[in-house]
Image (tube, rainbow over all chains, first blue to last red; front, side):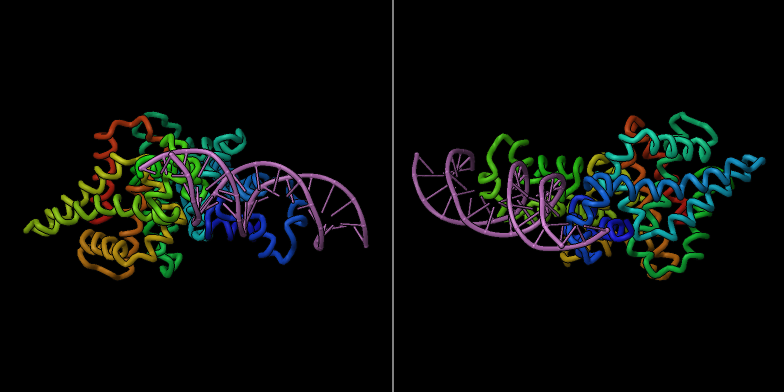
Length: 171
Length: 171
DNA sequence: GTCTATATGAAGATAGAC
DNA sequence: GTCTATCTTCATATAGAC
């Protein structure tokens, strides 16, 4: 799954063949098919593993008493996660195959809804949806940009936290 | 090219075959190959046409005398362009094939550099690069999000202009 | 310009031996 | 679990008639 994700990140899901994944692992296609029945299953497994990281952050935030403080905590987790996995963010957020899969799987939709609900303080109006779109775009899109490849994580974190607070009206 | 771009936007470049493009046009693959020698040529032509829209905005801004006012003008053009072509933005900004092509073609790199230089007031330091990444992520990523599909253009425009000014420190 | 027909290769996927 | 070998389908791309 690590090999697959790295290849997905570099070429996109559609342009990554099972042969490429097998080659990266030094095995044959048949060996890969022993673990996963279809290519979609690989994509699904990879997406699921990443989604679990978001879910972990949600559990922590939802356990906090002070709601305002919890939003800050969740934000910090999400920003850190994005920075830590900057190479992988763009494929997970923007690849058409991933997007299609996320939309088809109820489990994923639930996590995404939980995430946005929490960050947006349960708002579902136009303003909340625009804020949500801006927030995920700003965080995900920024770390994925080659322009910031050599920027230190803490600089990036500070800039993104400040921007996120501005978007959410937290400061 | 319109048919190709629409398909690229929906499936990504790699997952779009010449057969799909031909079918959308109601002709055969051979007819498409009469106009373009390779698939890459189609992608290149499509990217070039979009890049020319950015260049047009640049010409207008660069012709203005007041630099500060020119930045505002350019920003407004770019935001409007993104909103107008929201369905297409994500493929143009995030598809691995497009990114590779843009990086290989000197003509495209020049336009991108001109765009960022102007918006960042010629800064090339860490702060300027982070700002540039945040700006393009925020604008491009926001309009591409399905969450804002039904938001009216002027609401989106107002939100994005305000956010852009915050990122650039213009307000 | 568009067609039919075709070449060539690589994709996803399976069968069955070890 | 991994291999070789194979199947089927579809990809890019070309040849040549109309």
